[in-house]
Amino acid sequence: MTSATIDDGRFRERFDEFSRIGATDAGGVNRPSLSDENREARDTLVEWFREAGLEVRIDEMGNIFGRREGRDPSAAPVVSGSHIDSQYNGGRYDGVVGVLSALEVVEALNDAGVETKRPIDVVAWSDEEGVRFQPDMLGSGVYTGVFDLEYAYDREDKDGNRFGDELERIGYKGDEPCSADDIHCYFELHVEQGPFLEQADLSVGVVEGVFGFSWMNVAFEGQANHAGPTPMNMRHDAFVATADVTKAVREITATEGTDLVGTVGSVDVWPNAINVIPERVEFTLDFRSYDNAVVDAAVERIENEIQWAADREGLEYELEEIMRVDADPFDDGCIETVANAAEDAGCEYTRLVSGAGHDANYLNKIAPTSMIFVPSVDGISHRESEYTEWDDIVTGADVLLRAIRERASE
Ligand code: HGY
Ligand code: MN
Ligand code: MN
Image 1 (cartoon, protein in one colour):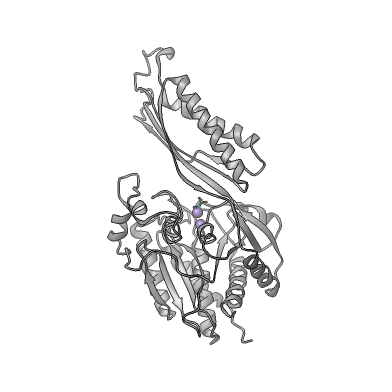
Image 2 (tube, rainbow, N blue to C red):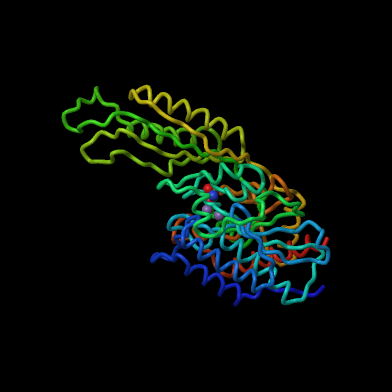
């Protein structure tokens, strides 16, 4: 079989070019969904797709597909990719590694003149991070039927900008329907964003599934008043209730299941003044576990804690669960393909599950799916100092190349 190999130089040049788009002084990137920086990254990717001879399609959600034809154009494609939107001041590797490695795979196959039976689609999904427009995995969620298009278009950022309007503004509201095609299988390479591969001193992780998670928006509504003359027993302080709930998150994660994690990540306080009792606090809750029943229990307990905190302080509250993704094991066949590809590539690996959500969560609902992880140094991610050794990325891309080639030939 003609060997195809990852072109380290080309791949690295592309990655470094991407790292310059929206670069921050501290070595990260600031390319939130549908921002001007995100548009610049999109434009660059489309140009590279075209240079690689891929046929580019952009759908109604701005998901970008690049197709490499196979011998049988009617055969369902092998799809691989990830996302190029980032956290506010996030890391350079999150998502980008998966998209650029999939592009490098098709380039390596082109260089080697390898013709596969099936088409191969490289994809960059819109709004995976869900920080500017919640919830996350919005582009792959509409594609797989989890969300409908109008719901997604109406999602607003903190300044009241609509997703649909911003997508139009940056010129990526495509004509292609955003709905699932017949997919043979889906592979996603991603940085682990946790400590386990580094602790095990391994370059590759074969991902067996992703944690289930719940995202909630909560608001406590109390009464602003003067911080001086208002006696403590006359206060309705929205922030005190928020602090109680935050403490409860730690109590719940300590008692509801070994892998349960819980986070209060975003907090907005009004009027946010040193000498005014907080009137309103809006905050978010993120619970995750590989056991759906554990997420259910955590959600039930925190809903009680919210009610009790509001009663104690005499507050009104609003609570909206904006997303619930069930933990779901990936496809055994795809997991085996990745494990065999790692063995083929001569690298040791371990099997693990992902605490981070990925577009693969949703693709797994419509097509056989698995993921490949490469190590995150010190387990850091969603931070500008996120870092993965380049050799590990090249190893991961080599495993991806073998997995894609295998399945695109069957
Ligand atoms: O939240 C997540 O796990 C992902 O970064 N969207
Ligand atoms: Mn990601
Ligand atoms: Mn992320």
